[in-house]
Each structure stands twice: as C-alpha cells, then as structure tokens.
Length: 85
View: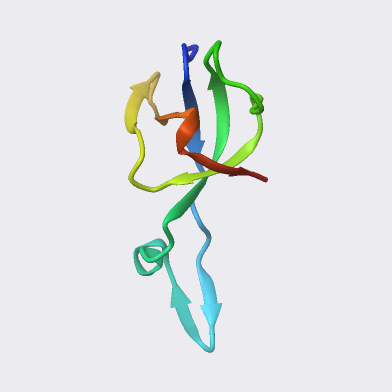
C-alpha cells in the first residue's frame, strides 16, 4: 500500500486511559482535544518534511479511513498535519 500525491497513510495511536484524582479518563471523555496522534505508514510523492515512521498530530476531523488486509488506516493530506513529534 503506497500513498500518492499529497496524501499520507497513518496508523492512529489510541490514547491510553489516564487516572486523574481517582477518575479514569478515556478517549470518549477526551473529545475536547482537537488533534489526534498517529504513526506515518506511507507518504505520497509530493509530501515534504514528513517521513515514514514519524509520529504526527492531525486534525480529528480530517481525512477518511481505509481497510487494508484486516487493518484499518487513516488517510489524510499533508495540510492536515499540525506537528511532528
């Protein structure tokens, strides 16, 4: 599977549960966070500054999903990436 043009294939990273003052915060309670974290699987031929294996943060409303060989990946555009970790 290879991304083309300005597209990036990502593997979303699940946020781990956090304990705060005895409360367990899950992903469902973290909906105020606008950005999600993912590992870059493949980059298109026009993507600059991002390489495969990078951890990126992207807008939670960006892109779409794709099923490939029993795995679910996200597909976003380079403009949706807000930072590289």
